[in-house]
Length: 165
Image 1 (cartoon, rainbow, N blue to C red):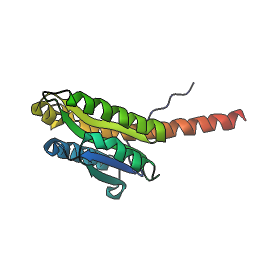
Image 2 (cartoon, rainbow, N blue to C red):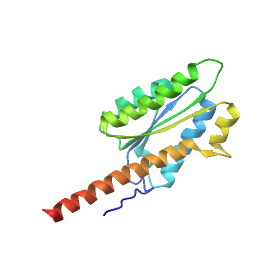
Image 3 (tube, one colour):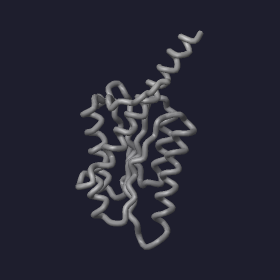
């Protein structure tokens, strides 16, 4: 039986951050956290691209377009959706998350969800580098660990097939 784990080594990985301009007070902090985490874990500055779109609704579409270029090992969606007085919050939160999952499934490119969904601005700031950490950084490192786990699993499976043959 083989057990495979990913690592947090981002060296050599090409990663896109797809960020929402809406709620930029929060998203700027999430994006900075993601970029800084990737650089601290070995990514080269030139291997981390940032694409800004209007809102969380547009993040999956941009992620899909980037995934089809073949340039990126992973894509990280970054945004902040704050609950308001209408059902709009649920629509945006649910469909942006489902859209990111669909991009990963349809393209095979690792896509992680760093779109926070909160009730208040205080909660948002707490998750953008405050007392709850930085969810942008967490999403970026989850992307790295997933890419490296998939590569390790593929290498392990390839070795097992070669030994069996």
